[in-house]
Amino acid sequence: MGGTIWLGNMLGAWLDTKYQTNYWENIITLFAVFVAMYLVISQVLKISKDND
Image 1 (cartoon, one colour):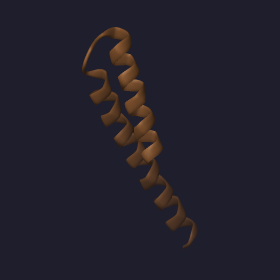
Image 2 (image 1 turned 90 degrees about the horizontal axis):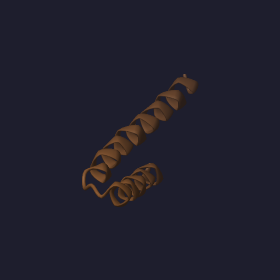
Image 3 (image 1 turned 120 degrees about the vertical axis):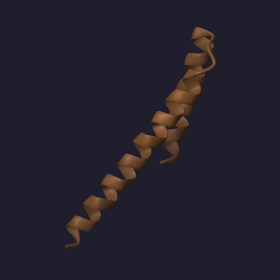
């Protein structure tokens, strides 16, 4: 989860420096948080379904 968020943050920072903006880092980091949460929740649901 942390790796996904960190990579999103690094990608956003790189885009900000490349295009000389200041909003990509925030947008992509927030998107990475949602992706990481989705991945964790889907894995928990899969594990709980396998245990039934």
